[in-house]
Image (cartoon, rainbow, N blue to C red; front, side, top):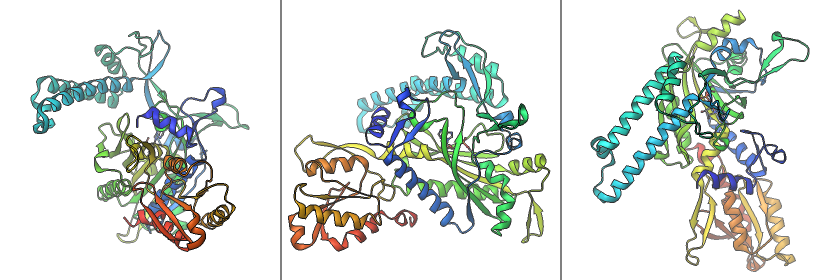
Length: 511
Ligand code: GAP
């Protein structure tokens, strides 16, 4: 499905609504509806269980959103958490300079893809796209152009040469998508932190920031947690919570929001061991995504060329969103930057005495960081599909959300075959009351059974249980499976365990 279809499906079925919609919405802010909150909780639960409960040396934390303002000076966010901003003087629209250039590159990529599609048609099965990329002069020229633009942009970004970014935009002839004009301001840095003011302190001393990442709550609590849980290095601290960024451009639905949620884990290691753990977490996190069934070629690693101010190695796990491969999760080797900075600004020691080597040091850190909302969008993008229904009249289609049953917002729907038969209804309701003690279930008696199945398919319910007239006699029900559309006839007593075996998170965690 394309992004537009996903957005409208998410709204229609109560996954995601635009925030404050009755006031025409607030850009880049969204509200999660009844099914959205269930799915979001399931994502968080999958992450928490696999990171915290499945690792003996990782513990959890829930730090406050507000932190002492010095935190953000120490972390570098006050001075360096900036995006390069440019305004168009005619439309008065504001853009990220690097995003304007990336959009230009995307257009060249589209041209390459068109050339490849044409050649594929012409040469058929013998077509080798890799060879064609190298040997076709037009395509090779496009690729060279992309490489040269990327290299100039990255140099300008890492050296802070904002003039060079402006020059590049002018040389490429990039126009404002709204006014069509090339009348640009200079490029300048824009800090992404939202600030607010403490009520009882006037002026700069009372300025507070909404945290732009959850990580710093972990760093400032490093010694508290290490001591209270008697943790030995290597060990990790995990946290899920809201983060806020004043993103200049907010688009692509819940991909880039101003208020979002992160699932972050900081893993503290002995200096010198960081690359070994960096590799471990790179693999472990990729595996977490693949366990859900996401195909290998829809996920990829992307090494950072521009390292953040705190990192000595960084890689993204990118997912193939409907608008291309984009960052889903980041894995960063953050060195001892954060703990050292907090030591310096707080004047408190944040060292660890390592009994194995009889030495005290500031630990190095490997971070894994993923946005809950971005993961949510990845799941909608991957598993929401439209397909022809097998074994029905030709052309009948259904929209089905083929999400892994362990993450599905509703695990099971209980349906009496007909709605005006008291015996059927009583039996169905009794089963529903029983099942909902264990799972999130729905009871549905409205409309023909086929339409009820379609409604459950659209929200990803893996099992529909139907009570028919035979059920009254033989105490058996029909369990219909969402993807294969198989129908199993089983005894009412077995329904709970039948579903349980198939929807438990343990089926994912064991992978
Ligand atoms: N502590 C490191 C950190 O915050 P990041 O790459 O800036 O690193 C980590 O963010 C993850 O948070 C991203 O991979 C993405 O999933 C999510 N994320 C970042 N900015 C976001 C935004 N504006 N909207 C939604 N998710 C965002």
